[in-house]
Image 1: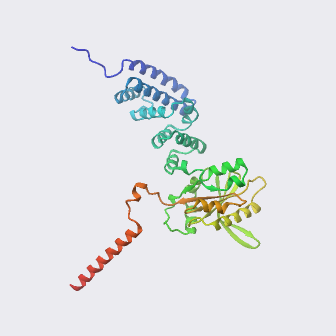
Image 2: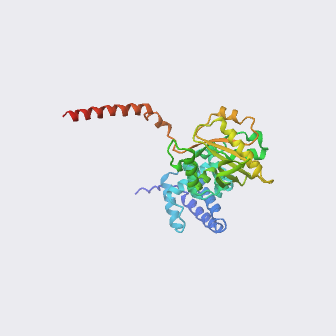
Image 3: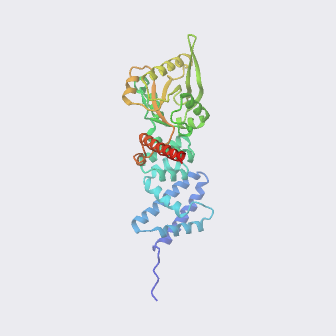
Length: 355
């Protein structure tokens, strides 16, 4: 009778014994630093699987066998499913540098790492989102929201005059905190909402708005009253930013950016600097939130302004994927269709009446 050939590599048992000892050792250390030690263990396991797949041709069957054996040996641990072992392999492949794992990956929960592996392909973006998660203590749902909202591309992209009017440390920080576009889809507003509708909706969803603004914004008030020589003026939204140590004025516009908006917010910033700003505060910042903007128009409007002002846009409905845009009818097409249907209905009604 011919000798049965094993489906598994000759050195599998030695590998499994070594892995068991490593896991037991890690369990002791994990009492002091559970997340860091566990994630580093996952990285080590993933690296071992990756190396053996590359050098010895290990396949899916071996990973499934390994998952089964580890769960039998460590029934109290829940992280050894075949799916999670594949995440470990992907984790090790994404971060071959052990220093990145220690400094970044091990500083956030494992499920956060899995989300980042699933949703992002660029190493630069993965590192950026890990850093932001650490800085802001994002939950997994918030991390998913920020990735799906493309925070990486929007952060720091507002058009401003900060470099010209603020000292270098504050100008760089202020620029990095403002987004090119704010995602206000949670408001569920109709396309042509009035400014008061927009403001009212933001007040009703202030917690979500603060999340979209970013860490550090403290809400001071809406329609904040300013008095100048007996005349009253009202700021749409007033915040204080803890990291920037300054007041932040936000003016809401439901139209495209217009040059006169910069003059209005410049006036508000000057008044707040004079009446509210304390000696320890940095200069007040003004932000204009509008439907859309043209770069050259904004740059001309802000040129020569002495106060720090930024211009960003917002969206209240989900962006339509590019591949669908060309397949949808235009407004004109829909109008023609409506008119054609109306003609058919009218003829049908006439025929019915004649009978």
